[in-house]
Image (cartoon, rainbow, N blue to C red; front, side):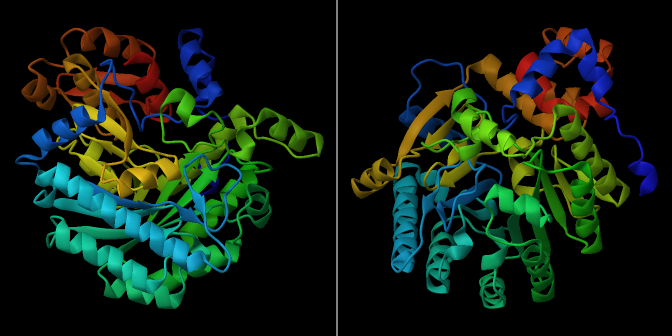
Length: 466
């Protein structure tokens, strides 16, 4: 491992200093989210247009990704931009139950408006948040029972549940296994107690390790954690220790995420709540520095990223898609593969406050204002807040972008079969030719592959050049 971690200058730094890549440096310095949500280019696109597009695609569909978003949290992290609802105190269980009620009622509205959903095979069903692991067992049973009975679950459907490490008690883990869950995800973020404290996390590093070990003992086949880099007061050495804990505990999968301070709503590269996170406020960040804290520099952030990437690969993990690592033979991440792999790119349906849904022709986001959301559900309307559409050219570009984000070679034959032209034809010949001249991709008769620098900068490439 030492040989992997000896150099201090991130290898990608030379590419970022190349004047020909100044726009890429600007992009990563400005700190947007990246290749997750793509703004459409069809003006005046409405939510009914999206639902019609979804209906069309679901006719004869391959397995889709279905998720239920439960937005409840016991507290809000200082970096969190997502739409969450704080639930604590004496009426916590009542409020949690109410969100399950609304989620089920919204799902019924989707089924009524898009009847093809009932029979569309579900590849993976994810209960995400928020912190759905806060739900009492009776509500978890009610939620999972509804989805099993009303959507196209098959013998191949995997069920995944997300939560805070401190809320996955042994009893809750046992109940989830009984209910057919085989995958767990948890936003650990760091195994450094000082870093966790500054983030506003209310769990310790030991709680995270205990969660992983308890989940493994309970027999979950996939235990995934999120790690973040670029956090307040975080150092490269701290990230190296995070990596050591991952390897010591043989964690199945790791999602490595850069801290993003730029508003997702501003860039429309992610789903953001109505209120900014504390760390999004410049005055708040500046006060932290005056109080003796520090923010890692961009160079240090890429060094942290490299530590994680090199260390995980050296230990036998495969990255697919970008920054999603799974132990060899166990990946890729199934729900992401359904949406982004070049030979799939199937629909995603997200039910719950702030959910992001997509099909090949358009995308939609559920309302992020919980009162508006509740009013729509109570009034019998699918509570989508906005939609965006793609014309034929944009659909093709979106498909290429998603395929590149997998870090797998983008095949020209698959592209031609779908769009009637090769990746060696215009406009792709010129776009990829420029990237190849700068050492970011390699082009051969079979298609296009990212180089090492291209893999690190793939989100910037996707969002500035394609």
